[in-house]
Length: 193
Image 1 (cartoon, rainbow, N blue to C red):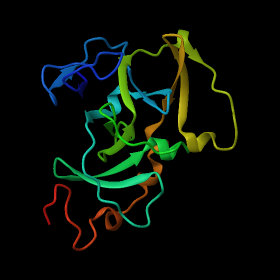
Image 2 (cartoon, one colour):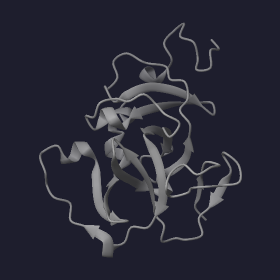
Image 3 (cartoon, helix red, strand yellow):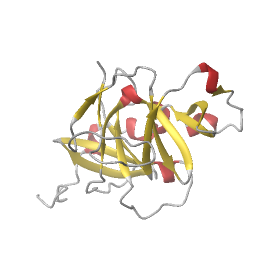
Image 4 (cartoon, rainbow, N blue to C red):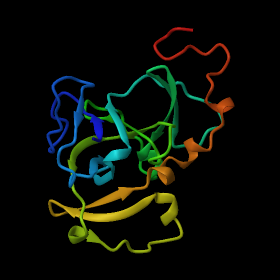
């Protein structure tokens, strides 16, 4: 079955729970295929099969010469993880993290082994998207591909924009190993050299 790591307490109106932080919860309802979150008051979602974990923000090492939306990199479970701030990515003013701020650690595609952290204002819930609640995505501008919106659904009376993580995290995916390495002499996250 598909597994997603969920937080140990209610992190929004959707009530995502598990017995311990970091515990794996197996999905039993296959109709619930989207993981919801909010950024600047707008509801978004990603394919739940692409979500590896939901974690509290970690220490970030800021790197030069990276796209503006890339906060930097973090040491997560022994791997260097690119961190993408979705507020900056969507052209919204950056905000001070709160207790509700989370990182969605995702795989940009189902076949990808690379993980990227998406910084979101809050995680909401796991829910289902079906053809009955899908809406046609209007062509707004030439920036549609940049926004990374793949589909739109109505959930609980509100529009939810489903993102294509490979487009949203595109800048982080184009970084080479030389960029993702910590600069010489930079302290590793957590203060260790």
